[in-house]
Length: 528
Image (cartoon, rainbow, N blue to C red; front, side, top):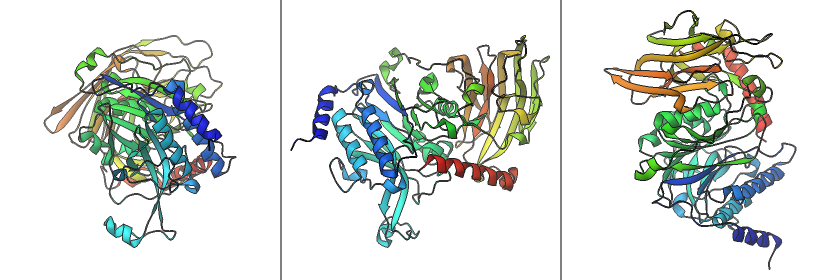
């Protein structure tokens, strides 16, 4: 019997050009990342997943997606615990399309990958049966829950035939009521266009396991599904995505959940040291596919394929962005060693513990427009532990120039009120920040910047170099293009491990509790 649904699928199949865009001999592949707003919370769980699924399928079948080899969707925007699904083991080479033991949305996505002939990466809530026998088979001594299910935050990858070829369960959870595997899994898959990918989820980006381990295994292309909660001055979404991809010199496909009212937005496609090909931070939610041609790493002819920058840097400001986009502030910023930038000088040194940062700068005094306010700048240094709302301390070091709404550190990483006219009274014609950091194979030293449009500086506007000197690593971050709207410009080092045993003392229990309460409130609004 020919159903209406079958007719629609046949029409889509005929309309879609299934010719393969990229082959192993191509110097590039075509990728798409989706900035995606989940369905309204006024729907019940079944309605929500159906609404989200319909939008996913429409995007995959759209004309905009026609030339893509691979499309990535963001974290947490498809289903809920109430609509969780079993996911086949990738080693079984199963095509879930029309197999009833899997949730209908997993079946439909498998079918659509097959019809459109694309690699599809989605993030979903997975369920897995848990018994004493299954735990023993995995050498996992932990007991099962009373309902006999494990629930995971999971990436699933379909190939062009709709086969599940990779599954990764998030290892570094951020206040999420899910299970984790005993040891980290490694999300990776190979494609018919000659590129091997690693993939990971949101908070994983800040940790060594499994993300940096995938980089060290020589994988050069990554898919990143995320529901990022942006934080000034160092961790807004696109800012950190570009910094991470640049520092490891890898291609990165980042798909971000779009819910600016709780702080989630930020998607992009990055070509390592060549920077963002396309990237967006949105102050209003959207469901949109962003497409770019990505030069293959290590490809002989890749030098002849220029990175076409699609990034649009609009003249919106943080003040206008933050009217609708919630941006958190680093809760440890007030513990930094800081001092006002001396406009009459051209250099300064500042230390925190054993870290000393050297700042060289050339500025021009500007005349702001009447009845306006201007950012004041401070030098800031920190060396110690970073605590993410009281969980998972990581060692980090920072040398930075910060924009502040007043002349105190408490005024940094904040925006002026919406009704304030902001006009610069200072332009940086040149900046050089230099420091010697503890040498470690497990650390990541990054150039880190963001301007008044909540976007990182383009890679052609700066120079960044690191050099090993004995037991230290010297880093130099240099601004090459004059800039009058800097919010943060600095060297950011993630050591992927705790630096001091007293780390929890850096943030008061009260602050941790308040941050946790805020996140739970946001979490309840966002996840159904």
